Picture 1 (cartoon, helix red, strand yellow):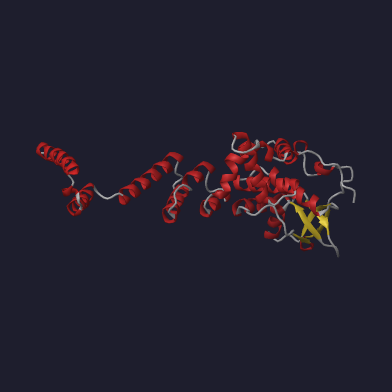
Picture 2 (cartoon, rainbow, N blue to C red; picture 1 turned 90 degrees about the horizontal axis):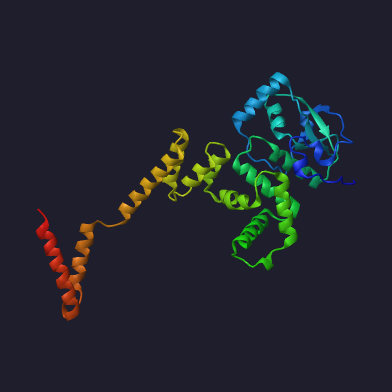
Length: 309
């Protein structure tokens, strides 16, 4: 199959997926049995909000599926879903037996890129989904494993701040990254590297709540600083159930740290008793210089005691 000329992302935002490969040969939608469609092994999207999925199902009940599912043909009259998994899931949920489809002959690479772009065009993307989607798209464009994409972005960032030798950068790869971000038009690659990549290192409990849209990104980053798992879980629950503000979360974290500091540090009285015992057992009494220092300390201590009521 001759691959059509690729169109920059900035030219397809808001114009539908047909714009990616042109619409000269766009087929008319058909209707097929929903059981003839299967989802691909490599799906860009991982989380589907149950509440939003239910809302979509109700909308489909009332109005039907307005935008056909995009599929590619397989053998024996079967199809693989390329774009529209939310519509597909909602249709199955309400028991639809047939769905409208648009069929395209796509390679594995084209199908994956279309799925990635459709996912990134969604308006309800949460920060986790968007970050993972951009990484997947960069991995596709660079032909890199996702872990290597992150490493490249960090190397590019280090080169800017002067923490690495510019000679180690591969210009063609960094240029491709910059072009992808310009075409996406969502954020700069610098902002993505510094603010979004660290998001994926958050503790799993915090990351899950962020992914499910239960928590804002700034609150998630603050809560992630609590290392004790039990304390973090309690704060996470309170932040969601009580809708705590960022300031309230930070105040609670400060309170936890103060408790930790108090419990970690022995009391002044205990320190004095311990030091007194150490002095008694030491060789300080045999050292004239140290005896003089001790005498001064004792005089200060006696004076302090005399000043007390």
